[in-house]
Length: 172
Image (cartoon, rainbow, N blue to C red; front, side):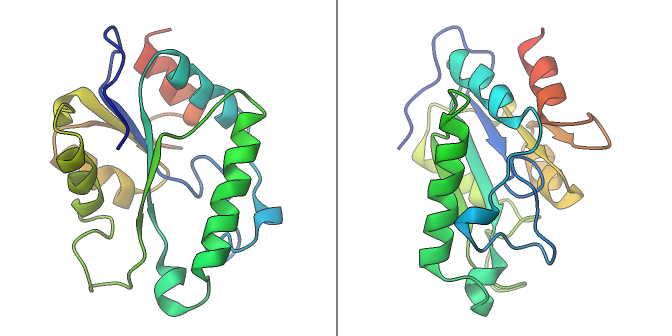
């Protein structure tokens, strides 16, 4: 799926929440249109630093709007493509996106459950949870990562923003 981290990488994988961590979260919680994708300040540069350090970057995102019909798969794909373009303008890229398209209480992958993380780790057996990290904007993002033994940062609580978390992760 994504391939191992670089030989000197500090982490096997850095997991990122999407909305509210990488890009601005729309009112109501859903980013349903490509033209609504706006990177948070410093997010593109922070991801580019992880890329340059040889660390795979994987998005783990709940997208309940897919279950409720508020967002179609076509809209989700368009938003993902727009995010890729916005990141590329900063020399950054995402290695994979793991998405939970389910409603509340209908799966084991919706954060705060750890199914999305377990899916990625099962596909990448070289990645060890204790050598992974997560950055998210909500306790529901950090809880599953911490439960699996990953280092986790909640924006606004542990660090001010994604760039601050990357500073700590890369030790610079």
